[in-house]
Amino acid sequence: MQSSCVVLPIPSAARPLRLRSYYTPAKTPDSDSNSMSSSSSPKWAQKTIALHPATRGCHLITPKIVKEIENDLSGFKCGLAHLFLQHTSASLTINENYDSDVRDDTETFLNKIVPEGRSAPWKHTLEGPDDMPAHIKSSMFGNQLTIPITNGKLNLGTWQGIWLCEHRDSPTPRKVVVTLTGI
Image (cartoon, rainbow, N blue to C red):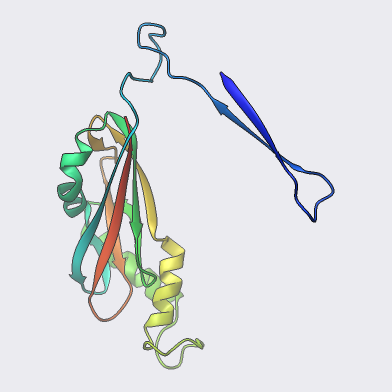
């Protein structure tokens, strides 16, 4: 293992900040039979996926995502898929992929806990009475996911699927940047 240490002075601090990094060269498969490392070099792939406008609610988008990335995905034995939604009024989450009632019930729950309409207490109303509640809902679920890749497939559980949760009243096209990394 190789290590390096860098000392950076910080003007307002009494002590300098000390950063230490470690690099362990990959072992060859012959040298360690229990090693997960491979002789393959790490690789990256990235694609921006345009999603068609969806009505308000939670939508299963796993098939669309997998279809769009399957050629790149098949080249990874082990890695991570990172999905980033480029919007602030919709969200991504992983949840039930079989029973659509779960998606409907999730939308009902969100609408009960985040007040909407002209009588809601929000200051930000320039883009409509549904916009500020959409921002809050987006922050609750988040706009990014990380999913393991195993043998060229997203390693989701049996009943797990990727959802796009559209929080605005008007259907809006959305973009998801998918970044794959691994070996």
